[in-house]
Image (cartoon, rainbow, N blue to C red):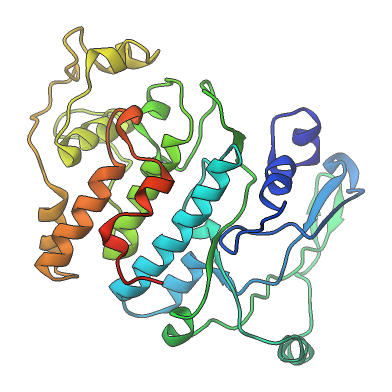
Length: 324
C-alpha cells in the first residue's frame, strides 16, 4: 500500500486524515496514529494505521448467526452507515467500496476484559511457509468474541476501510466497487462521483433486510449475455427504468452494449420486476415493511446518478423513523 500511496494511486491516508479531524463522527473509523515500517524483500515499506479497538465487521456478525438479523437491526446498521457516508461525502471523500466487510461495530469490552481474553488466547503465527522473499510466518487472525443480538442492537456501526477511497471529483478509467454493488456509470466507464456510493448503499440495504444479493454478477445463458450485460439488464428490470440517450452519450463503453436507440444489443425481454415483489416473495418482513423498504431502496437505485438523492437527503427518509 505504501508504494501505491507514494505513486498517488491509493488515497487511504489522506481520506483517513480528512475523516479524523474535528468534529469526529462516531460513524466513521478514526485514525489515532500512523507510521511506516520496513517490509521484507520486494514488499517494500508498509504504512500502518492505528485505530480504536473495534468489535468486528458486519459480514462476520451476520455469518455468526444462524438466523437473519431482525429488521430493526438492519435499519440501525443502515442508518449508522449512512451517517458515516454523509460525513465522508461532506469532507470530499468517495468511499467506492461499501459492503458488509467494511462496516465495523464497536465493542463493549473493557480494557481489562480484552487483556484477560488475550491472556487466555495469546497471539500466535501460522507455520513457516516459503515466499518469493524467503520464509515467512503469518500471524493468525484472532478477532474479539462475537457479540450477541442484544449487544448488536446497542452497538454503534461505522464506515471503515478507506483503502479504495478517492477524492470527490468526476472520475473514470478506474474500476471500483465489487461487481454486484457497482453502479451503472462505473460499468459504462462514465464519470462517477458520490452517487456511486449511494447506489452501493441501496444494494446493501436490500442485502441487510433480505440476506440475499439483489444483483447477480453472472452470465445469462438464456439471452447470451456476459456478466456486464447481465448486470445492465438486471438494473433495468429491478428499477423499471431504461437508459436514456443523454446518459449513454457520456458513457464510453455504452456502444459495446447498447444500440443507437438505447436498447441492449442482445435484445433481452424487458419487464419490470419490482423490488417490492422480490421482497414479498422472500417473506422476510411484513407487506407494509416490504413496500417501505422497496421505496427506500428505489430512491438509491436510479440509473442516472444525477437523479439519486444525497446521503444527507436520505437521512430524513421516513424509513428510519424510530431508529436510533
